[in-house]
Amino acid sequence: MASSREPWLLENGNLKGLSKEIRHGKTAHNMSSSSLRKKSHLTLVSKVPCRKLRQFLANLQEVILGTKLSVLFPAIPLAIVADCYGFARPWVFALSLLGLTPLAERVSFLTEQIAYYTGPTVGGLLNATCGNATELIIAIFALSQRKIDVVKYSLLGSVLSNLLLVLGTSLFCGGIANLRLEQKFDRRQADVNSLLLLLALLCHSLPMLFRMSGASDAVTVDPILQLSRASSIVMLIAYLSYLIFQLFTHRQLFEAQEESDNDENGGGGEEEPVIGFWSGFIWLVGMTAVISLLSEYVVQTIEDASDSWGISVSFISIILLPIVGNAAEHAGAIIFAFKNKLDISLGVALGSATQISMFVVPLCVITAWIMGIKMDLNFNLLETGSLALSIIVVAFTLQDGTSHYMKGLVLLLLYIVIGACFYVSKTPLNQLSTINSGTKAAIDRIFRA
Image (cartoon, rainbow, N blue to C red; front, side, top):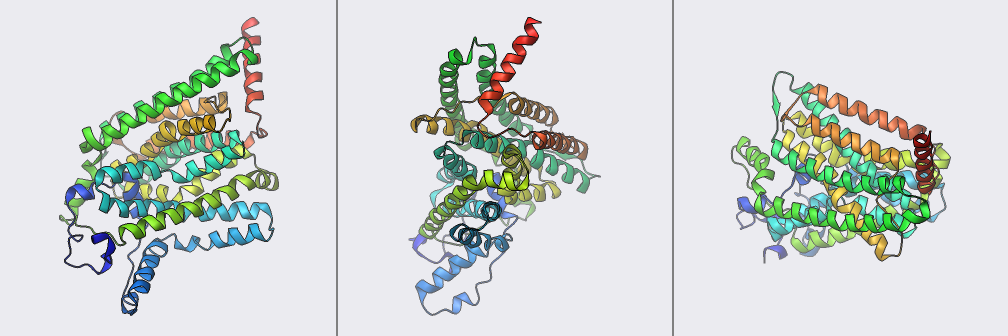
């Protein structure tokens, strides 16, 4: 079978000229991450006499050294050593955060490699599941330690980061680099993502409004929890429908940019996998295990880092975690914006924000339900308001299908203002419910006055 052979030695085999349908298993996330990869030279590896050793070294070179972020891999063993030998907890947090950066990009690379063998549909589903694996794993570990606020903050931060920082930087840099060109993108894909984000916003807003309008906290706690779980089920159904829309019924909306890329390259769209199927699967499992370990370190040490650095947990979770954890994906989106390929940049930013809002967040609520933990969709007034304004501003920004640097600058400034807001906010952990109660009481006093 092809998967048992060494694909990097295949010159005229069947894997060399993959069909267009197989290549379309790629998503914007894969294409974004591919901009940070570098070609591996296997001249020395090919001279190793032992076949098994030769194949292992080739895979090792492709997976570990095949990215420009390979310089950050030493942070992984350093984080493990720092934890085992009792180094200061902020050091463990910082090293773990740095170690997650190349791992997130490598997971995208490995899912793309597996997609070559499974076909576009299974590959697309795999990308949809693993696209934000880092955020999901961190959230699950935070849930297991009942740090519900960290879960909410980190997921909210990922959405805000994609909508404002990544999209804003992409539009700004793309506009500056292409001042004399009119930048256009396909509005249809952006419209679909905007609709799903507005649905997610509604599901986040209703529990908060329900609590504010309730008679007392004791009366509203259970109904809010039931409403959040029902809304989460609806969001998961909507996301499943979105996958069907993206992978089956309207696949052409999400492949137009990739086709134009192949045409620009003179039809050089023939690609080949660089590792075998089972090798890719084993590496993916191993990478996921390492991400789980580092995520556990991050969750355990985030409060110590907050105390040591004098920065609130909300700022670290909403601003620092998404920026560092998704740096590879974000950098790729910006690089494509420089090349005037905004469809890919928008696919990364909006696609990731949609996936977190419509899949990761409700999945965490359902997972918490299974674990017997009471997690709802009430993200507090300040957080929900920031999310609402961000979604609305982005929807207005993308409504005409054109872009210039001023649009990106406004999004970046909005992100800076929101970041400053959470920086000065010194909300203690596990105090969201107290804040919500105080907010409701203040609103009641205003209406009585």
